[in-house]
Image (cartoon, rainbow, N blue to C red):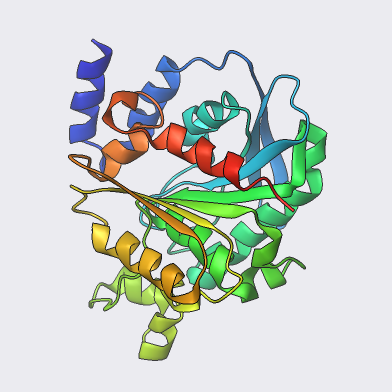
Length: 284
């Protein structure tokens, strides 16, 4: 019955994402996880985050997870299941809200994301996390957010951090190399009208020596974010001699890759691959 519910809900994902994620949250167990909900990290913009910590965590790796939704929709509460999935593997997971289009463009949501990372770094020890073992992670447009912070130094510099302060980052069907931007008014509004502005929105253009290690998870059957983007990012990492691990999963699409962290674990080994990556880059 649960698999039927998931399959039916997938059909209406775009129209009813809140209901979809609520159904996942309802089927997942938070046993062994301590949740801290609604912690304000930016009172000016009324932005909060949730922290999911393993019971009795000590010096655990920390992951800041940015949800996807085409930079236009999503709420941290929808992603409780992801926070719990990571926490059950010994990770302190931080899931922030950030402002979305059309309230803000790229500079706005990346500034919010950087503030959330600064908060996670400063408060990690309060939840049993290690501030010197910090990873970023995101799905789809959230993968773009994670990648931009990990590669373009200007965003973390706003909060007195640098990409080298990160142990690594994980992209889950992330968008890294999606030019040209067509005439869609939303994307032009988010990323700019000029060629220079749009080039500056592409994480692949900011990979330089010293970039933090990357894990790029990608479904081969993804028709929303094509595998070419992850392949391009991996190639760019290779060009500068930094480690990027590309994992391509046959027969897996865009949302199925995300759900493989939770209710569709049998589709791909994404959770195990993520935890293995985190353990191999244990911080500074």
